[in-house]
Each structure stands twice: as C-alpha cells, then as structure tokens.
Image 1 (cartoon, rainbow, N blue to C red):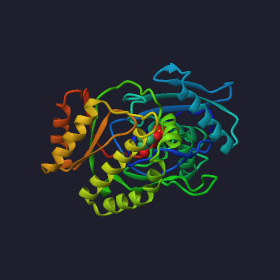
Image 2: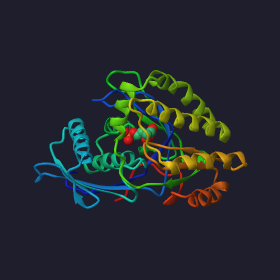
Image 3: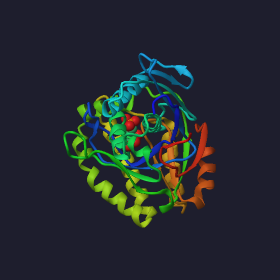
Amino acid sequence: MANKSVTAIAHPNIALVKYWGKLETTLNLPATHSLSITLDKLETRTSVIFDPDLQQDQIKIAGHIAGTDFSARIRNCLDQLREQTASKLFAQVDTTNNFPTAAGLASSASGFAALITAANGALGAPLELRDLALLARQASGSAGRSLFGGYAIQHRGSKDDGSDSFAEQLYPAEHWPLEVVVAITNTARKTTSSSAGMLHTATSSPYWDNWMAQSDPDIAIAKAAIKTGDFTALAEISEASCMAMHAVMQAARPGLIYWNAATVDLIHLVRSMRASGIAVFFTIDAGPQLKAVCLPKDAAAVAAQLGSTPGVVETIHCQLGAGAHIVN
Ligand code: PMV
C-alpha cells in the first residue's frame, strides 16, 4: 500500500489538568498525567506519501520546504514509525495549520496526531490506535490526546519502557458538550519551546516535587467532575492546575513567564464573569492566549466580553471536536 497519498486532519486539544515536565527525554515520558478536551475549528491537515524514489524525507510546512526544529522532529517520528513497521521508504509530507503555529495553541499536538494518522494510513494502517498513541507521546507529550475526540487522558504511566504511558478517550464530546472561546493576544512564535521550558523548570524550580505530587489527586478530581457534569468543580480544578503549572515555571531560576498583560486582564475578567453567574473558567498553556471554557448558553456572552478586551486580537469560538481522522 505504499505510494498512496493519505491526508489526515487533527485538532488541537487543550489540557484542563496540565502536563508540564518529563521523567525521561528519549522516550519522552511525562512527569504528570493530563486530561484534555479536543477542539473543533482549529486544525492541522497533513498529507503523507511514501515514495520508493526518495532518498530522504521531504517535509513541507505551510507549503515551504522546511529546515526547522519541527521538521527534524517530524523525521524522527517517521523513523520510529518505520522501525515499528519495518518499512524502508521515505515520505513526502505536506502539513498546514489554519491557526498560528508554536504560539501556545497546541500546534504540536494536532501536528503530530495528523502526521501519525496520515503516515499510518499511507502504509496501509499496520498499527493499532494504542500503538499510535504511544508513538504520538514520544513525539510530543500532548499529541496522543489529539488522536481522540471529546475528553482524553494521557496517562503518566510507571513503566521504564513507557508502554503504559499512552493517551485514550475518556468520553466522546456528546457526554458534555462544553464550548471554548480562544482569546488570541499575540500570534508570535514563543521564544522558549515547551520542551526547553519543561527541562528548565524540572532542573531549577524549588516547587517541582510538589507539582508532580499534585498530579494524581488533580486527575481524580477532574475525572469525577466530568463524569457527573459538575461545572463548578471542573472550573476550580482546571484553574488550579493551570495556575500551579505557571507557578512552578515562574518559580524556576530564572522564572519563565509566557503571559502578557492582556493574559492577566483576561484571567481577572473570566473570574469576575464567573462571580456574576456566567459558567466560565480559564486555562492557559505555554503562550499568552487564554482559553475560556464555558457552557453553550454562555458562549456568546463570553466571546463578546473577551473580544472587547484591549490586547485581544482575535477570538475563536470552538465546540468540542473529533479525534484525528483520515479524510481521503
Ligand atoms: O506537547 P508539548 O511539548 O507541546 O507540551 C505542551 C504542554 C502544555 O500545552 C503547556 C500543557 C498541556 O498539557 O497541554
């Protein structure tokens, strides 16, 4: 089945219980469990064809032949896939995002989920979903979660070989159709990658052990809140996990800060909206964008208020989306 171009779409996911830090870097073993929701609207679209005439992988990002860090990570990921499927073929990869890349909008999650799904498809689907989740985790700790729609969990795992550190779906989107307003405050690429920031945090933050110890209880609370649809409980635990992730990195030496002034204004705005009865909470990743998670009835009001905040350049209103899938 080589020589067939396969295209896949994957959506970014945003973590409500955060992943930050690695136990091991070769297998990319996360230091924490994480729990996420997959968004619709934002998407990565990736086409892969394995070609016997190629002497090396040819990678185009947004239409340009790429020589970036990201293309090296794509090659690495394809190497793992070839190793597992005993394929010797190189690939032509064409990948495009319909949203800003490397700006705290989970482009690596959707990017690797789309790549792995398309590449496996182009090889005739030799690998099962569980194998794809393990491969995705190795490429990017948040990518396995984007293989799944709705609510997903990435297990930290406890085995040295990483075989129990995989993502899986907790619930489909229909279980509890929350909505998300993404407030973009700056579309520039971040200056410290997540991987570099995680390493710096683990090696220099005095709060590191507390951050890791909090993962088990936080995941249990978030799972229970989602199971019963308890918005207040999910709001509290999600904001706590987000603030703790930023606190542990801000306490690193020197401290790492991904926020700008508008991010801070938006945190206060979301909390005052919630105090006034609007069902909304925030989460923020390794970038200055704020994601406001809300009930569908409140989404229009949330989008209007976030959109009129100084410093917000765009808002994107998302519903929960599907997992990575092949489209041709
Ligand atoms: O998968 P990475 O290396 O891009 O890590 C992303 C980590 C956060 O987005 C900041 C948090 C998370 O759990 O997604």
